[in-house]
Every structure is written in C-alpha cells, then in structure tokens.
Image (cartoon, rainbow, N blue to C red; front, top):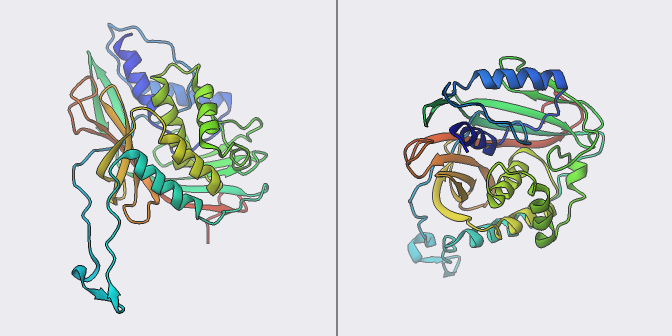
Length: 327
C-alpha cells in the first residue's frame, strides 16, 4: 500500500455534505476537479479508486478532555418544598452515551415526509484541501460554509444541492434515485430498514463487506455517521442506529468536543490510522449536533490535535419542492 492509498482512504472516510445522485458527465467533471485539488508525489504511482461515495476533500474533529460537571439545583437546596435533584451523572462510556441518545431519539415525534415531498437538510461545514508531500499529508482548512440539500422522499424526482464551495456548479440538480440503497438513501427507503439493532448492524456490515477502504468497523461507523448527519429518518431507525453503533468495536467516549458552530458537546468516536471521527451530542438534550475530525496520533496525516474538518447540522425539515425553504 502506498501513500496515495492512505490519502485516498482518509478522503473517503469523510462524508459528503449531501447525498446527490450524479450524472455520468458531472461525476467525471467532479472527479477531474477533485484530482486537481491533490498534488501527489510524482514518484508514487496513483492507486485505483475503490468503490465509495463521493466524499469531502477533508472534514473535521478534535478531542478534548474537559469533564462534564455535575450540578445540584440551587446548590443542593430545596426547590418547591422538596430537595433538589442532582443532574444525572455524565456518561462514563460510549455505550452509556449512545444508550441515552437512543432513549431520547425513541421519544421524538415522527417527522412525516410524504412520498411527494423532499427531505431538506442544512449543514454548516468546514473541510480541508489535502496535498501529499512525499510521505506526509498537508491539510489546509477551507473557509466555513453552509450547504443545503433537498432529496426526493421516494427518489422519484430530481433533487437539489447548494454548496458554495463547488466551483463547477454551486447549485446542482441531482438525478432521481431509481434504486435507493444505503449508498443512495431516501426517506422511504430508510423507513423500510430493520429497527432491531442486531439485525440492522448485521445488514450494514454485510453491505460494507466488499468495501476495503479501511477496516470493517470504521466502514460501518462511517456509514452510520452519513445517515445521522445527512438524512431524515423515522425515530425508530435513529434509535436502532445508535444502539447498533454501541456494538461496534473500538468506539470510545470523548468527554468534550465542539461542532462547526462552536457548540460544545459530548461525543463518541472511532479511530483509523491516527485520525479520529467524532459524533457530537448536546450534553443535556442528547440531540445530534455534528461531527469533528482530528488527528490524535502524530503520523502521515499530521500532528496530534490537527483539525481536518468539522460539521454542524443546523436544520432538517420536509418541504414540498426542491429549493423550498422550511417555514
């Protein structure tokens, strides 16, 4: 495996701001543009590109060690005639955090999306342009930007992606999704997935079995992360995804992290070749906030603490037409 393999694997680890289905011509133009963003060592031959979704040039995270404080209401005094209740202790493990997140997700009202509607997602993100210098990757953070995507709920209509960083086409119409899958999901498709965590996890592992971009556990963590950030799904599926993620080997707890909007939260993370990918949650409400990508071990991708990218989910809604803004 050469350095170009490693660079390409990191690039594909980081998820796209939307899930467009692209025409062959546009896919070719984007691929040419993407390759122009990379300056590989001329002494290293380019490696073939394995199957994977169109990904960010690079995205973010960062781990912190700030513990979440325990607070007693009114300093432990009396409220409404009775003793104040202590706030629940901060989760001690990734599994405990994901269990709390799953419990909250299960109580959420269903955001019904009709087949003739569109799932709208607004995201704040910052990615990186990466350059291979010999055996070292140099990541240059790009300016923060806001993206919006509209995906046909049943896949029958063209979608829309607005990304100001896409110099080829900042406002792109995307093709209908004729055969929805985990690679090209729609709301209607996600509503058909099993909600038993064990069954769902097995299905995702099987789906990722032929993808050798990185280890199977990181593949599955990556796949679930794409669904959490870039889609709208029934609460039962979100609940199952969180409980499934708790079973992935290597998932760890990060007690303090920050999303692209600067919101602090508690996170779960998976690591691959010294790069950590975090899912960040509000420490009180356990709402999904966004992601952060950070180097945690000195190596080919930089020094520990180097930020590679970050995102924040700002809004999700069901709208009637591509381009409509939620009211």
